[in-house]
Structures are given as structure tokens and as C-alpha cells.
Length: 244
Ligand code: DBV
Image (cartoon, rainbow, N blue to C red):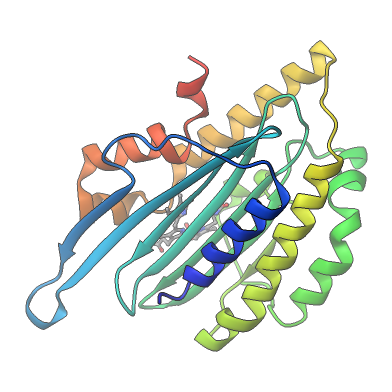
């Protein structure tokens, strides 16, 4: 059992329970990828598995799970709503490297106006504050990423693995449950201008994440550049391709 497997299992069960879930296609060769890294006693097998679903309101629900042994564990889990909903993205980047844990949990906004924040951030501020008491701000992160985060961005670098297994897991569950409450209540937009704004905001978010994916270096090292670029643009952040 890996550090983040319980997170993935919880998410799958919860999605199954609360949504009308269907599989989302994973391009051939990308559902599971294995490589051996390091030399001699340091040799490790790094296995990346992909998981993907959709529902009537959610275009793509997908996770990448990287199992590279004790000192390398990653679960990157993102939900991309259909383009006729103004729902935020659910984003979880749970990363364990030799240097420690790095946790990002958010409902990443399409817009930054007050009305949008009142709809999607204010209702969950109390939940955010309750978790932040135990999961303090993780410090600097790239300036250019700031427009993509919300007022309830939980960003923390726990020192103990036990904190990941307890506090971070609790926060993950609460964020996912709260996100699914938003999904339940979401109503489709029909105004042409609004639909255009949603599409542009989604494209700008997804293109940013594809361009700046912090996992690119790691995937390049394990699996090569060709596989990595195809994984990023053909699966992890695929909107541009789906609409062209
Ligand atoms: N990050 C991804 C995907 C990953 C992934 C698809 C499948 O977007 C993993 C894997 N994130 C990952 C790894 C690292 C980080 C770091 C492996 C460590 C990189 C390294 O140190 O080598 C939030 N993730 C980070 C960092 C941030 C985030 C701020 C630190 C990177 C840095 O300091 O440059 N998550 C990241 C982010 C957004 C998000 C920028 C949204 C805009 O949701």
C-alpha cells in the first residue's frame, strides 16, 4: 500500500457513490508505465498509473499516481468540469520526494470577481481555516501560478508522514466532498458570452498547467521526452486537443 493509495481509493468510491460515473478514455500506452531508475542498491522501479472518469457535469476526472518506492510518491488528481458550468477545478497535488512532502489542495477558480468568490470560496472558508490550523502555509511558490489559486488554497509542507496520513487525508476528503456539493448544485450556463468566458478561462488554466507542469522533469528522466509530452498534452491536460 502506497502513501496516496487510500486517497485514490477514497476518491473513486466517493465519486462512484455521488455521481453518475463513466470511464474516460486513457490513450493507449498511458494507463500504466514502468521504468527502473538508479543504480545498484539504489535501484527502484517507478510505476505511473492513470485513472480517468467523467460524469454529466464533469468533462474529465483524472489522476496520475506515481509509485517510486519510499522516497517518491505522487498523486496528482484534477477534475475538469464541462465547459457549460462555471465550476472551479478540483486540484490536488500530493507529492513526496526525498526532501519531504509537498501538498497543494484547492478549488481552482475560473474567475476572480467577488460574485465568483462568494459562490465558490466563501462557503468553504471555515473548512479551509479549520484545516490550515494544522497545515500551515508552505511558503513561496511560483508568482505566475498565483492567478490560478483561490482564497481557500491549502499549501503546506508537512514534516511527518503521519500528518499526511491523518490531517492531509481529512482535508482531502473534506475538499472533495465540498466540491461534489458544488457539483450537485451547479446549473448549466446558456448565455453565449458566459460560455465563451468559461471556455477561455479553462483553456488558459489548462494551457498554463501543461506548459509549466512541475512533473515534466521527473517524467522526462524516467520515461523519456516523447512519452512525457504525449502524457501531458494527450491525457493530463488534454482540453486543447479535445476541442481542435
Ligand atoms: N504536478 C502536476 C502533475 C504532477 C505533478 C500533473 C503527475 O501538475 C507533480 C504529476 N508537483 C509534482 C511534482 C512536484 C510538484 C511540485 C513531482 C515536485 C517538483 C520538483 O520539486 O521536482 C502546485 N506542485 C509543485 C509545486 C507547486 C505545485 C507550487 C512546487 C513547484 C515549484 O516550486 O516550482 N499544482 C501545482 C501548480 C498548480 C497545481 C503550480 C496549479 C497551477 O495545481
